[in-house]
Length: 388
Image (cartoon, rainbow, N blue to C red; front, side):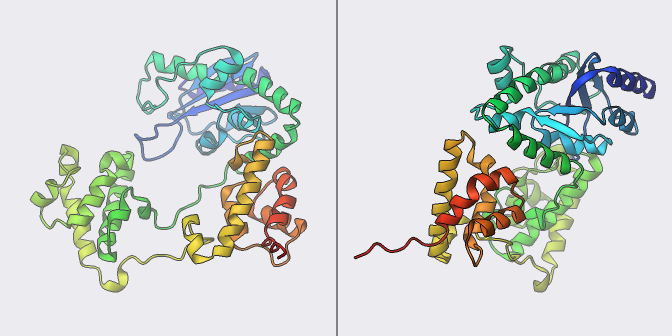
């Protein structure tokens, strides 16, 4: 489907369907700068399967309105919700089959693995990392995309029954509601994103780090203009190597690994200008380490605060033990970040209530707090010394 007239027909078909609607989206991660959707797939009983090319369309708001009262079924919903929101599509209710499988205790939660284990069908995943911005899309890719929604509602029914059998349906409902609430929330902007350059730990000194920063932003500008993934413009390894070598002329720059390709060579002036700008910075404009919000990395706790390190170890034991009891991955029982923050700076008055309030303040769901807050309150205080 590629035209507004086609979209109107699809809207009518989907509105006439019954039951949940299976939804999926294909992006071009690793190929494009943005995370926009290049294909949207839907399937609903009574409506069939439809594939939508969103590129020629302004948005999909009419389709969203037609599905306003319908439960959406997605796999790993957090990956697709942002790009769907860009198109004006936001679920009011959803069921995430990947998250449901985690809560139900399945070890393998990929769509292909679950479909094979629970439904007995094998899904081909050859095109999962394809460049979905390609036009026209090959027929085999379209078949693959259609299969991604073909069995989602069947999978949803089996997983819903399993969650109900285990007494976890209410837990899943809270998790799904949280996903819905965050569906159109803009992504968190990271401060100093250049610091995430792979291999930056090898770059010593603020002056050299300023070269990483300059090259990172120069690359980001080129990537945004081209709508190309930054790593396809210039790899992180090349940025780090150039920051260490500090080349001052084109010949020296192009001898550095990663700068030899034709497309990179054509941008040599951009890279050299960025390095010149970093070289000209006064000392007070060089990067400085920003204070880290929250606790330090756990491997430094024993040195910084041995008491807190012991608290963290006791809290982690509680998390692992409770997760095993309920057949849950520990990270789904409670965010590891919440546990670190609690152990680093517990409430002054440690009770089940104050721990519950603290965890809810971090963003923990009620079912998580109910399972673990009392146990954490019991282990947060230092154990009493053994009597002589």
